[in-house]
Image 1 (cartoon, chains in turn green, blue):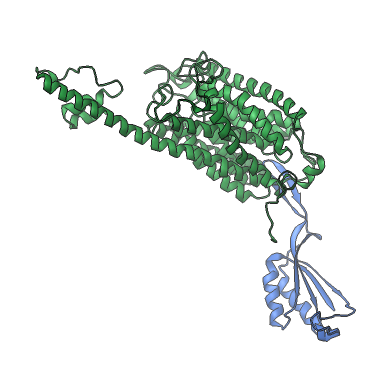
Image 2 (image 1 turned 135 degrees about the vertical axis):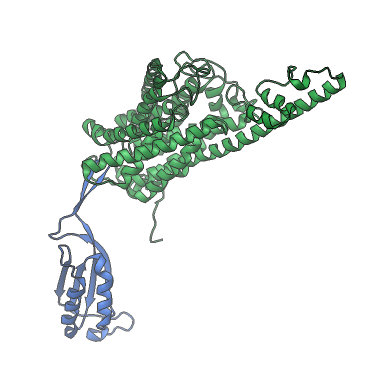
Length: 476
Length: 111
């Protein structure tokens, strides 16, 4: 910005360089060095404050435009993105049920968010959870909330964060697919959002949260867009759900191939596009940091798609479409916490490691332990989120994002290896929170609505038994 | 006589055209699955292997007057053959009677 001053008149230089603060202080510059009459001083001051407002308004317009688009992109990840990705992976008789779970969360979490969710995540400054400051969206209007995003209306910030809260529980449905009751899903997700998601989001992103890296956390965990909050919590909870519910009838003897990889393919590509809103949007401004996160996101996805495919090629002699898209998603997961902290080449590295690691998790690790994580919510999100959070501590660099202050080292590449320890604390806390919270919630759901459909219903399919419809009435 | 021919789906169009060419324009076609000596194939989804041993085939059914049967069989053999395993089979059987529903004609005139 200061460079512009060379080309502009001195007056404008003053306005622009005083942007962050207010233009009230009397600046010392050649233009003001003489002794102008009081009328002229007043006229200049008025003009300055008008310009100040206009510049702020212009920046707000740019940032707000990007953030509204980002919010829409993140919603695109749940429906249609995740709904199609998961929908294609299940058998024909369960496709509507899994899509409906994602869609129901778009509605359910939105209402919960307006009532108390936003406030529990971003109200107050407690170490573990927010308060009721913003309950019923009280005081959430077009005025920015400078604690979080000083240039966009708080309404934009609120609705953007809502989209994260929607997709996170939706990810869990990948593990419980093809056997969870709809009523049980609704109750589980309501409780899970309040008990697991809200505290985790507050701890990592909320003011005063114990893991918050920029707003006074005790264990500053770097999590740019939700590696711990979104992917570890959902992925680990997914594993707990899969273990608690048990395997699908016939698993693993009976073949359960994906019913339409075409749907999954479209879904995965929509996820990739939507993820730009998720990660680059997490800069909360149309800034250089957003560009940096955008590039890291794209690079991470591409590298992971390649490494998963290569691993598959070596092992099976062929690279499959499902493998390539799964790899891309794994890379997007792993780059999520790192997106706004790492340079393009470390992003490629993170993606490359994550693709191969998640391939191993869903093919080998899952087979060794024999749990039925139907669509690999844990293998991709839990595993990818964990490795991504760890690698963020190693690869984060202050020239990308000086989050601890100008010139202070951020991650291992800056020589600050202690950050890896902080990351471990964040990871551990997210795992423990997800495991304990999910077990308690599963118990509650088990004795109220029930979790699992009856064996006959499972064999008949959830579309008919839970929703009374079929996905493909091709003869109708 | 009735001809049941189970053929490769990829050969169906040329079999149908060849039969039309020799003047046979009535047939019933079903998409079926099965296998003879041809083994299935293996599919791998995220490391899980599935053996698919019932493969898609097309079944043609034709009921013809005796004098047309040999030509029809030859035509099918010629047009359905790829020379590879999995080309299918032809079954012949005798038909007791045939009735046209529209006007209750019987026997060969109903064909």
